[in-house]
Image 1 (cartoon, rainbow, N blue to C red):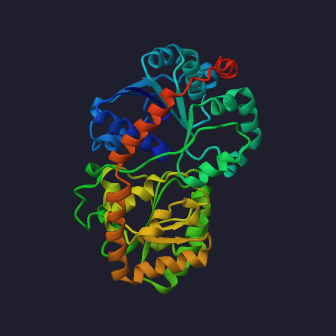
Image 2 (cartoon, rainbow, N blue to C red):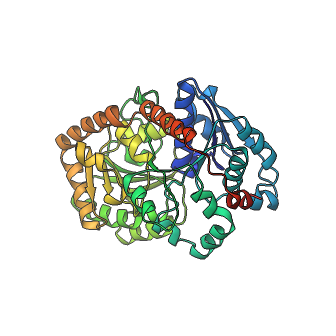
Image 3 (tube, rainbow, N blue to C red):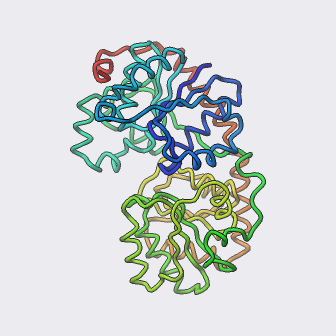
Length: 400
């Protein structure tokens, strides 16, 4: 099968979608398929190399990079359209990642013109919380073509069952909804780094237990809850530290103020983004991952942590019920006291940590290995290829 993935930004600093797209492409190429990813030119080529270096068969994935210069490209993907048209003509199926980009809207329109099925993976951009952000701007975008792009996709791929349920009850006229698949390759995890190496990236935590937050520093990630929850835990566990890893997307300043108010500045370390070996060393040495998000689709950091055997303290809004089923961590409500209590349990009980670590690895082996996800993605594509293509003048016009 000839597969084209379209994702405007493939740099790893842009969260989970680039990682999912790269892993999916690698898994499909590893099964013998002809896979291409088209994106705008990388701004972080070295970080991209680190992200993909352990992915099996990624060297067989063709990566086409486009120039994003000019207002015409930003608004209408004008200079990219001819190349997109060529790539889509050579593909059997088109997999579009994310929503609010002209490149994606034009890719959908060109797929319709070419009679090729396309699938859209919104990555949590169509749930009620996301749509409530910059609401006027998104309503205007819907009127200018994005609604047509969404509604005429052969399938919408969602990160979890709740996101799929919300879509089925939404205003969008969609009829083929699929829970998307994710995971981590065993080759990325094994062998794990030797324990005790993370302190070289954060010397202040040497020989001290630390809780790990690894995600974008954005309001929806619940850093305010994390600050208050950690303060409650830290009051009873004076040895524990908190390491915050990730790019700032507006939530850092408020988080720092909360930490300062609790007098915990010396025990909280904001180290910026980490990739490659440093990230896996953090997973290896932490007490647990804590991600008290207000809303999540498929969360790469949780999957990676579990694959590394790191227990997870996460909010119910992360929609990771496997963690509860396998007893691989603790699922909490968005409540500072509940978060603090869960963190304290793991800090103070090494036997509990050990059991949850073993369960996390078992969960990874049984459900979160990407080899399975790659095969199931191909089955979804085959279903789309067998369904009649719904050529629409609406989507064709929307892409002009």
